[in-house]
Image 1: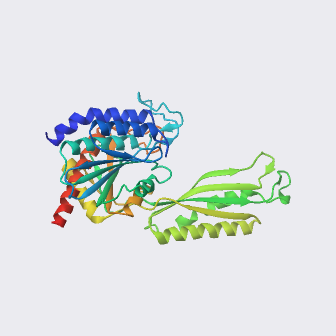
Image 2: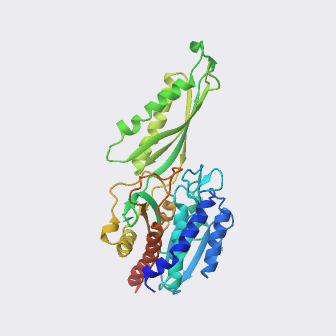
Image 3: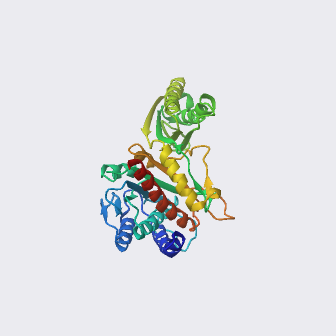
Length: 392
């Protein structure tokens, strides 16, 4: 059976799985029903697997030849907090939970690829990693600690994106996503009556100055050739309209692609906070929580992914990346252990606007499932061929 015929035959099942996942999203480390659906499908395909229990992941194994190279393919399982607004007939029925980042599609793609690889096993082994908690908690580390990468030569993953059209795959080597860090700034002033500000130290005023001042870290201290972002996304202060706030808390994110730039921004944030506190007689503390490291595709594996993409979508569908995304991805943890490549799958239908990831109205064209499954199937075969030739 040709790959095109096989893809068309399994496509209805991929759509069915995707819609089931979409209807019942679960948050990080809570993917119980999701895991049950995946395991049921792996049993149907007669693919052995190991399950780490709720909060863990699933590792399926396809063996074509015991002494051949071992390749891992990864999909993420968790949804996001929030209420979906797509109006789809299979929209989320779980209040406060939604699949607004395409993970429902990633799981379906990998299960589709599993069916293809099972139908015609390559001369090596393929490990199917269904990972919890990509959005929060770094579930990739859970999979690594469980031994999912044992004997694995390289790993490949991908993400649907409406920036690209269906039938396009973005492949590049080097830095693909940014380092993410979270910061919390706590301000302590002196509370007082709103009518007598001279008796108080207004934490709201200090917070406002800091909100504006930290923006200069990127705009005036970082070269425009080094992509960087500092965003304050949460502000908490005050108890009443006529009370001067004694406390304020700012929380935000730092995104960088180079370690010296990251270090400069963190040091600058602390410097500005300390100086602003001293200027207004307030106590200001800064706490940094390290997030996901950057995803850095290795060159050989990016070339393997490029060759696989060429076979799936042709030269016209191969999209380069000129700049890294400032988003973050815990696929980075895998790449700190072994080589690999992370790609983007076009998911926008002709005529659709570019609704971004994490938007409650996010959806993708299900035709992208065919492309993703075919890519995962082909990249595993291409990698096994490449490494087997090197070892012969």
